[in-house]
Length: 117
Image (cartoon, rainbow, N blue to C red):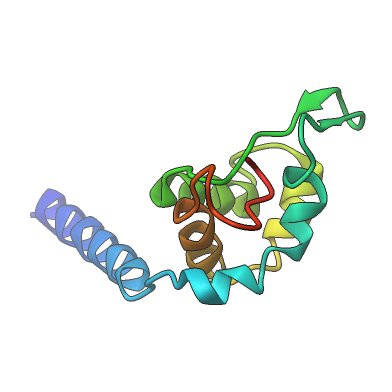
């Protein structure tokens, strides 16, 4: 009986968590207005950070939206460790993250104003 209650509680929590993110749909146009901080590093061709370590900053244009959302959520929650990304991601709402991911995933190398050609 105890095991069945535990399984039911876990299933309810999983459903609640899934439902919270299922309502969020990214809007690429809205995302365009939310990427100013991203462009500071990701918009510079062949940019490498010097602090806290030398790190090649990846291009975002054309990346898969779900991958970008997952990465930003991980930076926000501390699952991915990079101080600068955590500092930026922690202030983003789930909607902001979905919008930013939609904006970058809609880009191609031919997209006008794509800072990551």
